[in-house]
Image (cartoon, rainbow, N blue to C red; front, side):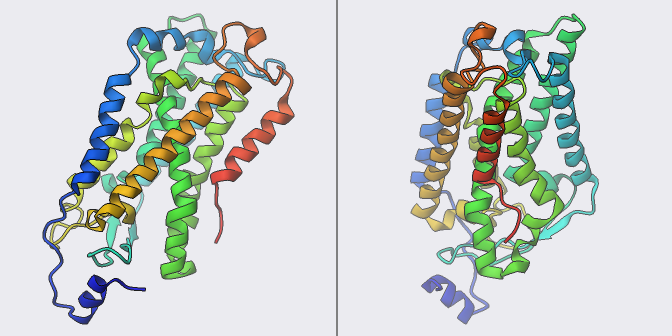
Length: 336
């Protein structure tokens, strides 16, 4: 069902698109509130250093099955895979996407060729890149510690914070794709409309990401996600919303009117755009809270001594595998 605005636009093809789509004041207020909350509750370096230790980032959750060096190898494989996919994406032929605005939007469908640097400008790729860098940092720490080399404190901090940001963000990305973007494309364009999500890059960035995160949390080193650090989780999200507002007139410079890659960030939606922002914030904080609870009370990955590290036990591989499967099943999608 079309809105009056869309109906009028279709009836009069020469009708001009709105030349201005300034973010609604309530969207700005939401973004400002989240930013202020993050700044006021941001952990200090002392707080971070209490958790970002070699022990907390390298001790195996399942020492019977894997060694600290083995954790480093798997993390390095994850990092190589993730960053390799990024490079292949940038150097590849690119692809054309056809974002379809919401029926309530004042905008029309449009085309965008994602090639070169533009190919990694979606939030999915921002999240995927950070995850790859996080695994690279974690792998480096494991290898340095295995060979008795000094581990820089900045590397410990980056490894911890980047994982605390990329873990809930990765699950947010896959949730939005599974429950919003994929169904909307299927509804508006049919099976052909989901080709992007069913492509190699789409399946990897929306499914492999959460599988790797779940494996790290439940089976490998259990990089801790601390409730006290929740303020760091929305940093990349806030940055991307600002990037979206900055790029709205720059995606296709030769055309007039704003453009949005994600239909729910379309500022012409008014209050619906703000509701979408609030929903994204709630989902993001929800996943962060879930991981913090798992780490502290179930996986106990940031506890002090080895005996306290796991409520499931050092040999409880089956429950951990089931947890990996459950977390992945919650947000993964492979077909229409």
